[in-house]
Image (cartoon, rainbow over all chains, first blue to last red; front, side, top):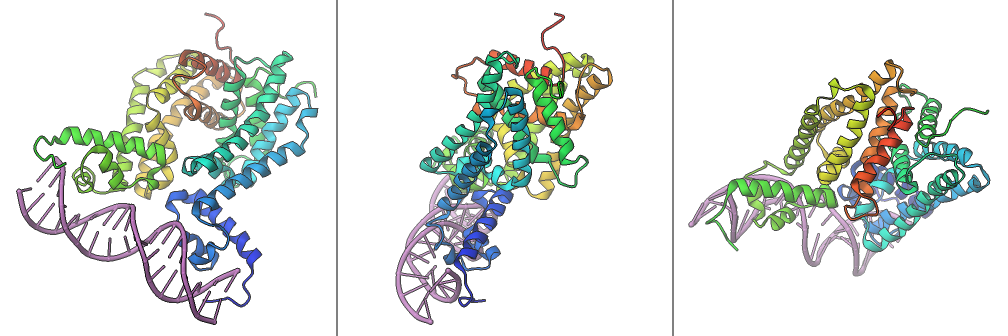
Length: 202
Length: 202
DNA sequence: GTCTATAAGCGGATAGAC
DNA sequence: GTCTATCCGCTTATAGAC
């Protein structure tokens, strides 16, 4: 079993993150032991501590990195240049596609918040708020310009986010509906929910 | 500390459920120990096993009882007698009010599913599907009668449920908005999302 | 960078006294 | 019905050899 020769730090680091992510998403942070992660990576438990000072840091790092990636990916679309309705549609598509491609990252970043120690919680929460603000800005712009019919920007933001994030709980690649079809359904649903047309004026 | 005299089985049973529910919701099932539950109840850990054969059963019982209560409460409203739009509004109000009154029960019944052993999971899942079917039936009736504009009954059901359940993640009794105001916002949002008017024809 | 070995403690669960 | 005491496996994390 000992494979000191041929060991490869970078490869191990990558595998630890992959394995930890998968197991945390599957069973929950508290239910997964460092030994279990190590076993699946193919190293002994002690070796994990070359990459994270402790279990908590491993979780926090996964979550922070995910949130940063998410924010960057959204910012790369340059959404501020879009009209509110276009931006809203872009957000719906972006959010669903991001979920479908990285279900585990998205899942733990919502589910494992309560297992973060206060300091780490604050970091992740700040990034989460930034992501929420992305949708909030779109709704605010659309509301201010009279294009969206909604009662409260904040509540509507939270409602739409919960709705979109919920896709992870039931989406399966081999399911009844194609991903594209699901995107269409959600686009229509969200546009309708803010009183806008999803597919007119093409 | 020993208080054998004056012990009271029924009272203890109730307190165990209350405490376990609170702690499971706060920290997650796997992160809560039987000792911690016992401490908060005011008994020794061994005493808990007079009420549940093991920790898993304690969780499963809380979840099954909650789902049964939820289904009964909804059925008591006699929703089948209502027109689709009225039934949809009733569902929105019911779901939000139920969440706000029993946030912990609702929370664990969604979050702790993955910590249930297969047999218990099946039981809870069946009850969950029944609850989902309640909303699904409303949407189907409204769609069949041409009152709702929606692409897919199942996906729309899951989307609305996720949206409504999401209220627990941010609702606070002392928050900016009254519960009634939040109910209004969600009613409008949901009605709009299925292409129906929330407040016309009164 | 990884291993083995181990520290130090907490986990679920049980037995038997009262 | 509750307590005390206990079994024993598993937990995170560290130390030091290679």
